[in-house]
Image 1 (cartoon, protein in one colour):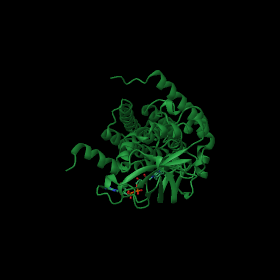
Image 2 (spheres, rainbow, N blue to C red):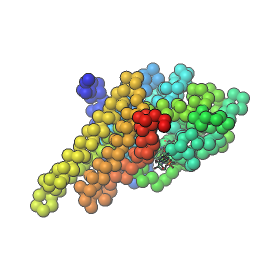
Image 3 (tube, protein in one colour):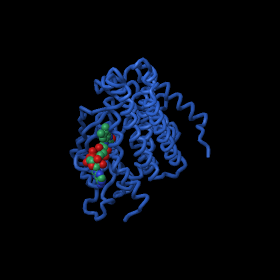
Image 4 (spheres, rainbow, N blue to C red):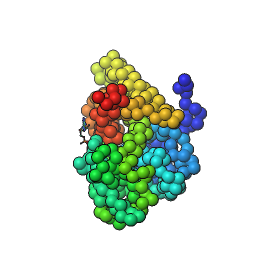
Length: 382
Ligand SMILES: Cc1cc2nc3c(=O)[nH]c(=O)nc-3n(C[C@H](O)[C@H](O)[C@H](O)COP(=O)(O)OP(=O)(O)OC[C@H]3O[C@@H](n4cnc5c(N)ncnc54)[C@H](O)[C@@H]3O)c2cc1C
């Protein structure tokens, strides 16, 4: 067992850390206030190969792994969760293309994410189908050599800025098995009938795009079907086994950033004539926060490492997502507490981090859904 990062991993981690410090620090607060998309930062991250690190070189990507993806996103989220979210989501869904796409599809859709300015997204959630993905009703009906898509999706990353989407559609409504009714289609966002509207007023992650997406007789060729018809649900579950590993990395980054802010603050802030960090109650809080972050990081790295060994572990990945995201919420809360009233104002970054944290327990599987996955893996179907 070797817990050391390779030299290459250390270099990538340092590059991501310096990039985030240099590029995010001065602009993060304004981007958040204005709900502004970080166009220039996305461009630079693309040039530096700091996105979609798990995408193989033969498809234009950096050719690294899920561990590197989680590590880089941790560095980004440590400095700003909103920009980190956007840099995570430019390639969101690429893992599904790698897992289930034909050679032709991978060669067509993946390289433009790096060589051009393509941005993708994965549209799963619907107004009446959130955690219950098998209830999705956006239909894709075969007409000759095409599929015709109708329906709507909500809370979709990159709905307005994306150039193409993976869309989770109902293709066999008559099928008895709920898990064999859906398929995933690749849809260019400039197709007739595609419409996206930004969903304003997000509590946090306001530098990232989240949209409602509407499909009104959107026609795509049959060759845009990902894998076999009816396999969408199974493909989606396999996707989560991958994506959750680095979304858990978001949690580690946010928690570490909040911890770093707390450490700085308790050393500088004096009350009763002493730094508040000299009170043992504060020291114990810092010790507990740091222990939780370290434990979360170990879980995230292990689950990502297993993916890179070709051994995805559904249970461990769900545990890493559950735990790291819970730790983020706990640590950011304690950090704000240590900032006192100052933490309640947006002059301090902790305010933005606090608002950002909650979504980690909601998207990519709510904390309850993660527990369903974990307990099912342990107990089996009873
Ligand atoms: C900022 C943001 C970005 C997002 N990006 C995307 C995206 O890019 N693509 C996409 O498709 N979606 C995206 N989503 C949507 C996200 O995946 C959903 O919000 C999430 O899956 C939960 O679905 P829901 O909101 O409909 O909640 P619901 O499913 O209605 O859940 C509400 C509550 O009920 C609980 N619950 C539901 N079922 C059960 C059960 N069986 N047992 C116990 N408790 C249960 C949940 O855990 C939750 O606490 C995003 C959401 C946000 C906020």
